[in-house]
Length: 271
Figure 1 (cartoon, rainbow, N blue to C red):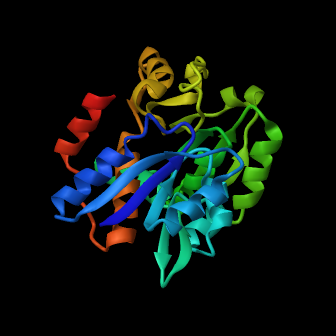
Figure 2 (tube, rainbow, N blue to C red):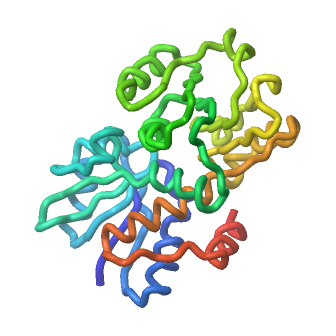
């Protein structure tokens, strides 16, 4: 029986085992998928141990996605561009890395939410690994602009420099926010996880703007409360979680699982 896993710290909250076991059952595939609490500073050692013990591949969540990029010997184009890996797989015994976050995010927006970001003005909050994983996919959809708003200016500057050749990406400072009108707000920070109140001026958004938080469950309450208070349509990252997981499963098993309403209902009951 094939063995898969997800590495993260923390990891207890992860829905990935439930998702992948559901996919496997629907496709009549026998596999084991378990959560692994990674040790900070020891990712490479622990990842290697899992593979040596018969692991066929694994997912990676915070804070190990950049470690996974360095760990893999061959990286797909999506991983190279984002310098971040959320899926490790073996090809002829060689450790390979892919990133399905961006594809999962765009698929959730376009197919599930029915939202097209072409020619839209986008405000992305945060400049960490989560932002890094989706920015190339956002720019590939031809938005009018993608502005990065982050507490640490230097971090946002580095992010913009990394992706400036892919499209109209730039930094925006707090005192310039109110001079803009955005169509889409994307939160990539962990504010909700840390119980920090989310705040932005309401006047910087167009009337039909929407808000998308990469977090879900309790971690998205801070942003969803702000959106509700300001009459902005809100979506959490559960759809993205499912879509990126389906792509990971396809990389491993060569079969694309369906993201069903039944699975969504199961997950919502767990949140």
